[in-house]
Amino acid sequence: MIIDCPSCKKKFKIDDSLIPSKGRNLQCGSCNYSWFYKIEAKPSEQIILTEDITDNTQNVFNENNDQEIKLQETKINKELKEEVDKNLGKTDEVTNIDSSQKSKNITFNKLLSYLIVSIISFIALVVLLDTLKTPLIEIFPGLEKLLFNLFETLKDIKLFIIDLS
Image 1 (cartoon, rainbow, N blue to C red):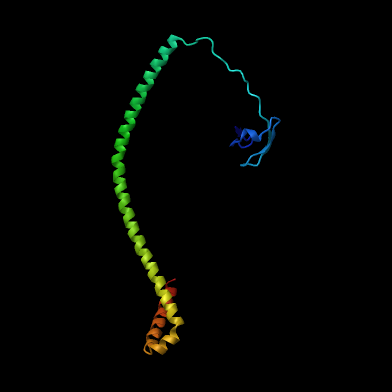
Image 2 (image 1 turned 60 degrees about the vertical axis):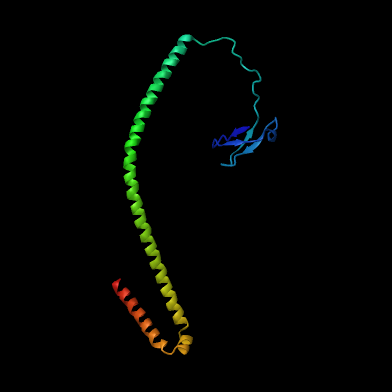
């Protein structure tokens, strides 16, 4: 059976065997509203139609209305189809423009991501060289002058950026 919450009107499907004939308290799982629910007796008698109440004039009237409605539907469908056909040409142009802009954006995004990865890799290399400066100089004695120049250049770039702001 389907039960409606009186508060939020949400519908719940509940097994008939869970609700006794005397009723029980229920709580909405959506809004937590609690109420007492009792199964109401439904009329067991079926209403049987014993007289024929259809009228021939009413059937003719319905047939004429059906024909008029079908004519109106076909006119509306033709107008909609023409409108869609007109708009389809316009959407193709917009789609071509959008696809070229998307390809430009994708190219720019790839370039930007490569640039960011390069900068991060360069910074990681500088930090690694600074950390391992002493062991590297012992292995490669000429590297000391190069590392000193690299760090001085980085300090100059840092000062230049600070002066810009």
